[in-house]
Length: 169
Image (cartoon, helix red, strand yellow):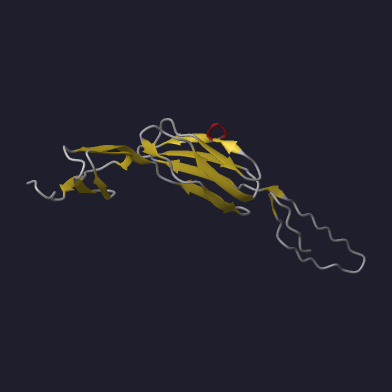
């Protein structure tokens, strides 16, 4: 006997039995609900929110939370197989990871391990509207003018290098 797949269940193994004259053979295939699991892992612990859409929709409130020293893990077991898309919520001071889709197959686990990137504001002010400069660091920028602002710069160390302006030292 070869059992057919049923979505959301583990398929019983095929069975072979010999039927003797006057005998009886019985095949019993037990379909067990799948233990498919979704895991979400982030380094941030506080204020992280997310929505997962797919065959079933979930939010972080539906998951079991596990806190570790370096990260937080959310787990949700027993979900149907299919494609799931995660959309992360905003966290002040961080750039949210982009949405992502993963396929959950029978008996498997999918892991969304995406990183929030810390961001801050860089301001460059000069006394000349003709001034130009470059910033090097975790992200590189080129700017000009008397006032330049980027409120979504990744955190880290930056160096500003001003370009020469004709007639000034």
